[in-house]
Each structure stands twice: as C-alpha cells, then as structure tokens.
Image (cartoon, rainbow, N blue to C red):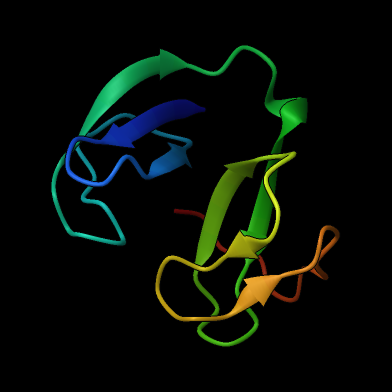
Length: 84
C-alpha cells in the first residue's frame, strides 16, 4: 500500500497502486509519502451511505466518510468490497 497526504487539507489515504490520486475531500492532488510498512495498523472502511472505500489508521475516533457526513463507530461493519 502507498500512503498519500493531501497538501491542501492534510487528509491521508492509502492506495494499493502508485499514482497521483486527488483528495476525496478537497480534490487537490496528493503527494506520495512512502509505502506503509505495517498494513495491520491500517483498516479498510466502506461508508454504508455512499459505499466509498477508504483506508484509515486505527486509533482516531470517530471515523468519518470523506464523501458524506456519515461517521463510523470504532468497529464498523464492512458491507461491500471494492478496490481503489
């Protein structure tokens, strides 16, 4: 996985392939920070409202979907699996 951080708003996103994705929050292009060494600390979340898939580091509560106002409990149910 590759970890990216938005220059504009600081949003972090994790992708399985290289590239220059745009931030889901402010739409700015993200810069590569480097590969994640321990994916076990990264959790995959799927918003039950808009079904967007994103990855977040565990420990930050509440989890919030970057595309809508839905917030996740500490252990959200994964409803659908999609690759970014």
